[in-house]
Length: 307
Image (cartoon, rainbow, N blue to C red; front, side, top):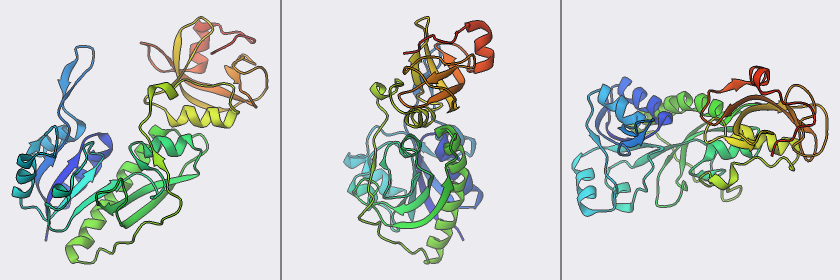
């Protein structure tokens, strides 16, 4: 037994779910993803990770700019799929699309709904200092991540875990979760539970204006901000020589001082309260470096100031 499915997704996070669905023998009749975008030094058009995976399986790939046209909605229905699987697709699904498959559209969302509805749930959970996150399969409705939930898995967020590490932990768990949800859907045994009406938060897209490190905040807030934006887009500061650098990994430091002051010879920076020790950073246009390797050439002395 297998389901006739449409898959809709774009980034790396969605690829394990596509691979799992194909591996379970479902009939993926179409893959919807975002169109190729300029990337790299040559700014050549690069297909999305999902498109690359889908073409490796020989699947039919579509990259519409919108799903709001009558033509796009008629084509969607013409696939005659039983359900659609949606993982970080990137386009809003209007009502005619949501109603264009018999059993519904099922979204894999990387948070413990209703906490962190929206575009950047992984980053926001880490930036907020949450102790846990997870993935949920929900049946989509017209709201923003408001649909009823079918299955969920929880994952602890370690004190120094970065958003990138949480992303990599959740992706395979989510793929298996969606696989299990589809198996239950196929049997007619997928139970759906409305989301709680309390505890709702929104994970807004990360804005460039919030990526600069504010050393005046307490060390925990600075640490969570840095790891929540690592590796992308990256929290940044200006080094004592004026060069810009992304800070990609930190831990709690020892020592205090005026915010932004380097308090030892290990690149520990004072915050408004306490300090953080920088473990990895990246100068603009350079490779990621361990702090100990960076300090061999940078010569940042105690008392220097980062801004």
